[in-house]
Length: 491
Ligand SMILES: Cc1cc2nc3c(=O)[nH]c(=O)nc-3n(C[C@H](O)[C@H](O)[C@H](O)COP(=O)(O)OP(=O)(O)OC[C@H]3O[C@@H](n4cnc5c(N)ncnc54)[C@H](O)[C@@H]3O)c2cc1C
Ligand SMILES: NC(=O)C1=CN([C@@H]2O[C@H](COP(=O)(O)OP(=O)(O)OC[C@H]3O[C@@H](n4cnc5c(N)ncnc54)[C@H](OP(=O)(O)O)[C@@H]3O)[C@@H](O)[C@H]2O)C=CC1
Image 1 (cartoon, rainbow, N blue to C red):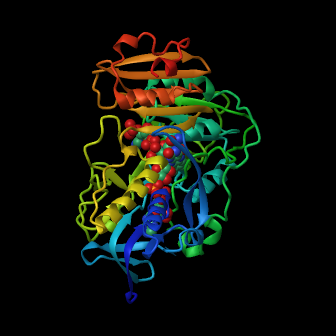
Image 2 (cartoon, protein in one colour):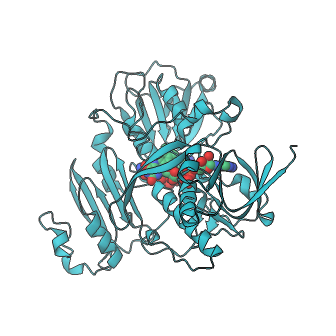
Image 3 (cartoon, protein in one colour):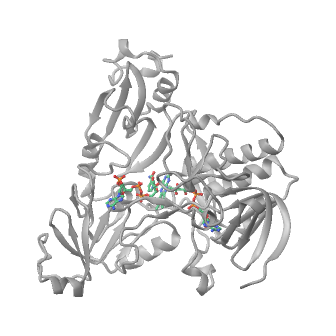
C-alpha cells in the first residue's frame, strides 16, 4: 500500500471534469477569485461550454467543447486541476485520496462524478455501451465492419444513433409501443416515423467543436481501461462518421414491446440448434452474435448497442460515508444541493434532486441541468461560507429542454408528457406531416407542458403561459390555430 501524503487544505474541492464539475469550478472561481479551489478529474479532457445562448427565460442552447484539463487553470487561475481518479472520500475527516495515494483536505466538496452507462449484459464481448469519447470510438471501429447491429433502448442515445447510422442495417428493439418514448409521446413518435428509413440530406457537417487530442491518445496504456470520460453531449452524433459496411443509406427495423431474452455467441447459438427468423436478404448469413427477444424473434448481428440509460456514478464515495441514496441510485440532495453528509454537495448526473419540485420542473439527466446544478451548487457553497441565504435558482422553476431528433428541432417544456398528472389533463394537438408537431398539456384550463417539434416559434409564448398559469379556457379552441398570432393575443 502506498503511503498517504498530506497536502494543503482547500476551501472548495470538486470531483469531476464534466459539465457539472467545470460549471461549479468556474462559478466558484468567479465568486471567490482569492480562494484556492481544487478540481480532481479522472478524464484528461474537461468539458467547457461555448457559444452559450439564452433562447428564453428557461431555454438555453450551447455547444460543448472538450478541452485539455490544463486549460482550466489558464481560464480560472485560482483553480488547481489534478488529473487523476479519487479513490476514496472520508467525509468525517474532510479528506479525499487519489489513485497515487495523495490525500487532500477540503472544507466543502462537490461530487460531480456523472453517471455510468447502464449496460445490459455488461461484460458480454459483443455488447457496447455509449458514454464518452472512448466508447464512441469503440463503437465506430466496430460499425465500420458491420452489416447489421441491434440497438436496445428507447431514449436519447438510441434515437440519435438509429438516425445517424448509415451503411448498416439496424434492428431497434424497444420496450414500448412507440419510438423515442423516453422523450416523446406516441403521436410525436408517429410524426418521426417516416424519417426512420428516409435518406438523409447529406451536407457538409462542419464540426462546431474544437477537436483536441482524445483521451485515447493522451492516456498511458494502464489507465485507458479504467478512465471515466465525461459524457458526450449535444451534436455528438452529428459530427461523427457512423457508417457500416453495406451500400445502403438508412435501414431501420423496429421491434416493439420487446426486451432481450438471451444473447448467444455464434458457438452458443449453434449449440441451441435454433434457426434465425430473418429479414429478407440475410437468410444464410452467419453472425458473431445472436439475440433472442421476448417476442420470440431471433436476430443475428455483428454487435449489440445497449443504450439503456445511466446509473449515477457514486461507487468510490459511498464506501466510507452514509449517503442517503435515491431509488435511482443518485446521491440525494436538498434545495441547497447538500447531500445527507455534512459539507458534501453533489451536482449533475450523480445526484437526485430531493426537494419539493416546482409543479413544472422535474429532473432529467441532461447537459442543461448539469450546467445549472453545477453553477447553482457553487453559489450554495459560497453562501454557506458567507452565512448568506440563497434561494432556489429560477432555472428549477420549469423544465425546459431543446434538442434535435430525426433532423427536427425539439423543444420540451414543463410536464411535456403530462408526467405526474395521472389522467387529470387534456391534450391539444396540431400536426403537419413532415413539418411540425405541437402538443399542449392542459389541466383545469392552464398549460402544464408542451412538446414543440419543428420551427414552431411558439416556445416563448408557451413558456410564459406555463409560468404564469393564465386560465386558457376561453381561448382553448384558438390556442393552436395557425392563423392566430398568439404573441399578439397574449400581449
Ligand atoms: C452519448 C450521449 C449523448 C448525450 N446527448 C445529450 C444531449 O444532446 N443533450 C443533453 O442535454 N444531454 C445529453 N447527454 C447527457 C449529458 O451529457 C449529461 O447529462 C451530462 O454530461 C452530465 O454531466 P456531469 O458533469 O454530471 O457528468 P459527466 O459528464 O459524466 O462527467 C463526470 C466527470 O467525473 C469524472 N469522474 C468520475 N469519477 C471520478 C473519480 N472517481 N475521480 C475523479 N473524477 C471522476 C469523469 O472523468 C468526468 O470528467 C448525453 C449523454 C450521452 C452519454
Ligand atoms: N438529445 C438529448 O437530449 C439526449 C440526451 N441523452 C441523455 O443521456 C443519457 C443516456 O442516454 P440513454 O442511454 O439513451 O438513456 P435514456 O434514459 O434516455 O433512455 C434509456 C432507455 O432505455 C430503456 N431501458 C432501460 N433498461 C432497459 C432494458 N433492460 N431493456 C430495454 N430497454 C431498457 C428505458 O426504458 P424505461 O425508461 O422504460 O426503463 C429508456 O427508454 C440520458 O440521461 C439521456 O437523457 C442522450 C442522448 C441524447
